[in-house]
Image: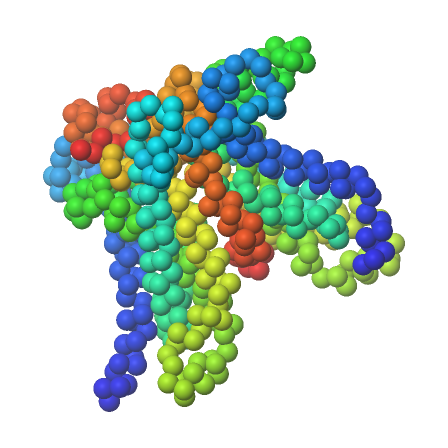
Length: 288
Length: 284
């Protein structure tokens, strides 16, 4: 009787730590955030004292011109980046889907840009984009061209940020597509070859349609990442500037979050909107 | 197969070489820069030929070296301390995530009850939720309710929570493949469910690498939840980037130190990493 009870409880005991941690550190904060998004909440107040304003904050957000600009930048950035990465990644996968001996080495080296910290990726590119000592401008100057203001002019900044992201994430699409290609049913391809389909026909009518589910998933994952997640690289490269030219929504949210947190702990005793934007060298919230 | 090998055109090897160059080039450049003095980096003469020096690394690690390096001047302990913090946070959150994740995954596979779909759903949601949205709520709750602000424990708690859904999910897919007979036999011999652990080692490796990588590389929450003493390496790096006058040699050396563990993992376990990356997208 008691043994049966213990048995019935076992799975819950096993699950309890995970449930506790997920509840306290994930679900609770997210719920808190959703709730607070309907409040007119001044950082100097306790959350209980704040007034309920319904969708007021959302209305305010959507009528903010800077937010609109941020959204436009995000859409441009995500659209260009994902399109370029899909074309390059899938193209390379189709091209290299054969028994080449170096392929596994390439795959190993290709995941490096995704494994190292985004902060470090930003660092490397910021150095390469350096106006005088960066490799790009050095190469341009030694070839007799004018140096390009990669990060300091809004015309170029978004392009530079896009190039860095393509470098970092094309391998992801490549590896996914290659895995998809290599798990295609061999018999179908065999049949196509016997029927005399050319290489292009095989790609267009067999390989791409069969890969479609994977390609859709890959596109969605990258779209989500590029619009909402990738911000460390841009933070290090341009900090959203010059102007708002590279300030994607997630970066804007981050900068605002830092201001709110600062106002909370009293580094800045005014409305968060009025807090000075943190300098690039002082992002941290001033704890103690 | 042999026929296809013979078809392979030398130009494909050229393409491979170019791709490898492009993937590794920036990382190699960072490494080379970290071996040069800042004066030399900022001078006009480019060129690959230079006298490599460990001076930048000595400057970064001056606090923990067994000898006192020369020409470093005043020793700034920030970098060495943040490296220690990063190690503690990375290792502890990986260990905790694995233990808690294993228990949960085991329960979800071996005992049939509701909640299994919830885990897949949670994994999916976590994959979608940007860590940045956790910033303000986590900062507020940690500071005013849990009293965990500025502590490594607080940071570890967030990282464990962030990684758990993925770890549970990937371990589940490995535990499902372990035959129940193995456990029954073990129970006869008086052993517990721990016998599955050696069998699912590849899954554990993948889960450990992904968790450690996130905890080691993460900047946003580390930035919000740490103070001067508990700062991790990514936070230190961003804070050392000023508008002008960056000591590129030292920054690159710090970046290199931050990049070394993930690079080692990549070379040791690229197969598991690729499995983890493609799981879910390719297999459905």
